[in-house]
Length: 390
Image 1 (cartoon, rainbow, N blue to C red):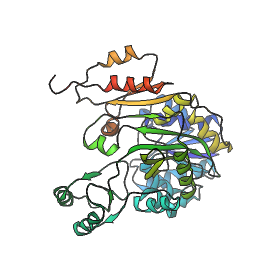
Image 2 (cartoon, helix red, strand yellow):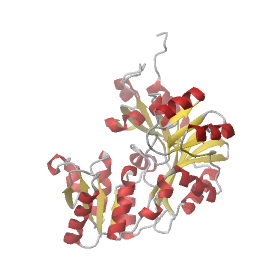
Image 3 (cartoon, rainbow, N blue to C red):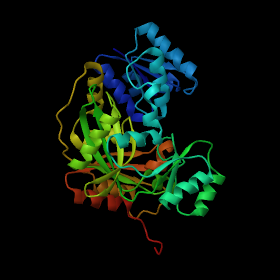
Image 4 (cartoon, rainbow, N blue to C red):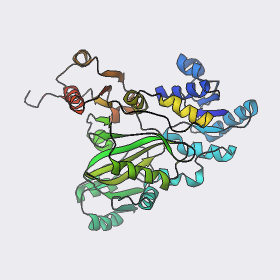
């Protein structure tokens, strides 16, 4: 089996997908823009072969790379990066090389938030009132229906980039005075806890692994207000959330893909859809899957791709939590105090690459615990800051 993996060196842990492909018997064929000699040894060891391009956004160069691999190894069976940034390029390459997976013709429903809304409605899940607006007058008309606050976000975008909460006419006018030259969707602000339904589906659309995470706040607030963030997995998924998540998988026709579906929890059994991502959750969450359940999600994915293996047995043994810290905040406890106090709970401690730091902080702590109360205590210890009076 011949599997092309785009950008195997970034994010830094994603070479593990390639390693497991290789160990499952596939050719793991990497395409990236980093010189081969600069790749970490573990990335080089994970690949059957690596093809360097000068510009990852130059489609012609990626086309030639895939053509080279086809000439050398035969028909390409899969093309992926598991990274939202490359979804469009992957889809076009799949079209050109007739490879299974998401194609250009159906990628809009997982890239454009306006199209996501329609799919959520098909799944009978409430969505925030809103639509694409093109000018100030259209925005005013919508706000007459929804009232303030509203959230303005690119109709097609990655994460919370260029996403804003608007609370008054002054904010609205300021936004349109500096609006980026892309389509924006305006939505009524929904008050609730952000909770996700995450996992991996097989070729028939059946989840082989699934879990859920609860977030301390949205990425929009984290980025725009320079906050730290915490999010943790649940040991038990609320039945209403799992039902909504599974209906989404059917509506979006998820096949042999990871999924990360975000909701607002607005009541004990009430969920409003936020957005869907057909890739693993961001940051270090794939590692958190493993720590929470004592599994290897990289191997599970590779065995699914190469051998078609279906559901695996797993238990959600732990809550696994990620808590970030920002260099600009005056924390009470030092890094060394955290390591000393919670050494038995911590699974992983990482400095966050700059491209992710606005959302994931400058330092990230991953820990696991069976008890929710202990989880809350650890987060509070990591995040405690000096008051203004101090």
